Image (cartoon, rainbow, N blue to C red; front, top):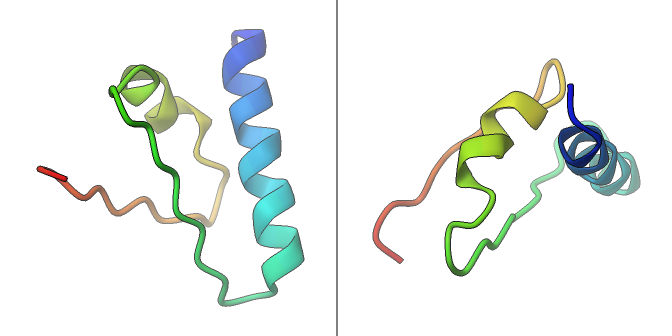
Length: 54
């Protein structure tokens, strides 16, 4: 796994750890630069909902 994917995963986990059990984290990727990586970076038990067309 790449260092970038590991970093994304750790940042997502860090954000959820601050929120509690039912937290919501919004990931804004303006140009879609990380869209191909984010699917591999989602931690276990985290659900990704993509908003298309923003």
